[in-house]
Image (tube, rainbow, N blue to C red; front, side):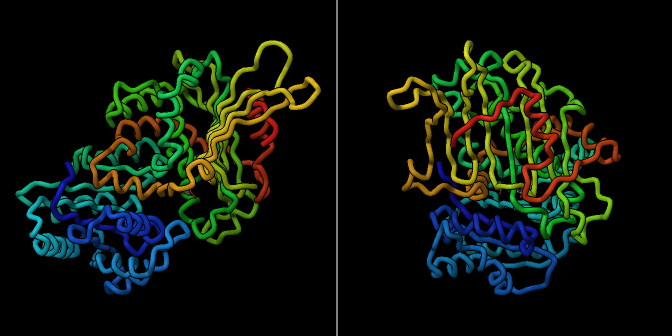
Length: 478
Ligand code: BG6
């Protein structure tokens, strides 16, 4: 049953990068598709900067229209009119009291709907201010309607720096909000082909009997970017590639590739299975890690001259259970590499007998979503020889009339609908940090050093050697 009543979406950190580049454009796309009806919805921006409503609108305007949605400027203006701005600090009552007043004003002005009131707080902020902002929301801005409704908060990674700090953050927020009110975004969970993983695995007879250690040799989950940390060096240097990409985005993908079939498609059942995978991961061995740092990274004035922060890492995870014992899961991520790509490569064991090209199933998350299987066929023609070819499902060709939604758009809609399936639960987060914390501490202490690599290259050659040792065989064609 669709909920009725006022919906207030409050973007905290409204003038920051994340809000401008991701949150507001996602809201705009939802608005254009009719998910944010103007007679119910009001959007509030909140930040410290003292600017007017119009100044905020002007700052956002340029980010709204992308090639994906060539919406007419009339839509842009109407959408911007839904946004009001309130300025205030992140730890003082005054701003939040003012914010509450503005939200309440809107709620009563829309009383023709006579429904509940829904308040969604999107924290596009650094995690250092999460506890104080959550406290302020809890104290001053909760939904007060006696007709029902809810208050929810959306938080972004990084959720802490290691197990200890993440747990501390979780308990501070946990004292103020219940788990069903907290939406921890990992935007990889909003990507089309990540959302497709469960369907693919559990609705296809092709895969069911093959998806295990008897048939699969190794699994690779790869993230590459062909640009460096330009403009974000200061942030990035505190975290590094493992905290920025591997511990969250790639690990979430690993969970969906490796988990058992959930009891049902209910969010809790799915998340229960993901936690079990994480808890089955064995401690990482130093010899199964290669770290890299691209040359030129330290030229960024916001990066310390002697930074030990990796901008590249290949890490092998091993899952200790009946399905995956002995199968390496290779997680690889890097900045300033030779291409921009995120993909999952599932490589099958060799067919007995004469050595042939390997069967490999590739799921390309981006760019140009696609799935393809590398398989052996007879070389067409008079001769009897074999060649590696592909069965290919390219989304752009196959689903020409469908616009694939942006990850943030889908996830924000889920937060409004109250669906937590694609959000990270507290115990999941804890288990994810448990896997990487010992390695991260060794890097932080300077006990492990990144190998320099050339910007625009494949990363350190040692990473390719590690892959080969893990059993990965380079396939051909495509
Ligand atoms: C973010 C990281 O979470 O994901 C960035 O902080 C990275 O460093 C980005 O560039 C990549 O997202 P996408 O969707 O472009 O692959």
